[in-house]
Length: 111
Length: 117
Image 1 (cartoon, helix red, strand yellow):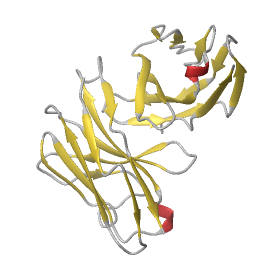
Image 2: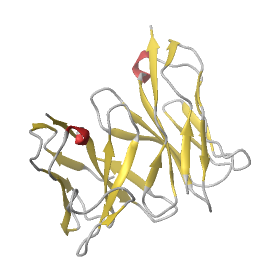
Image 3: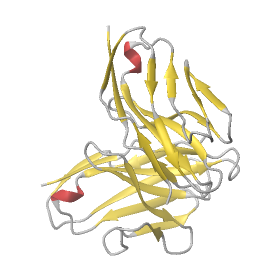
Image 4: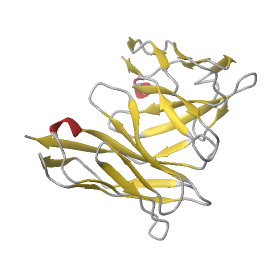
């Protein structure tokens, strides 16, 4: 069945460091891919998405490219801020509306 | 975008009791889902709430434990029945907005943090 695997956390970075959170997936067909973010004490929010191969999703300085050849959707940001501290979830949808989530990666950014 | 209100936001319950969680959406939506996020874990889909028919449950979840109602296109409830400490989790309502398969985006409620003692 479909599944999502994320790099384990927590990830601790200094402000302005480069961020990569790895995400790989297993799926049949052509899923849509998502990154969701959960800030402390808040609900889950969509960060970015890509619906087909080679699409790049971007938002708030974060980017991820849908790589079908490597079944990956790694999240990157060139310069993280303290306010980026949160839990990040990679997810896929087989376009039935259901989401399958990775295990989540906690990011802590220190000033 | 859809705005979702979930109640209660948190509760502490005695084992053996039941809790009903409400999810209200500010617009009519076709698809509504219930997820569980156990402590330190990812989100797992419990079921799809179908309007006018029984919910569709994922493997490992049963109607007797998690009965769901969906009386209309803007409202759903999830009941956690005969609770045990293992049911302590965050329960989240989600709706799908957009054209299926192309512009699909899922929106989430704030979640209900349940602690069973």
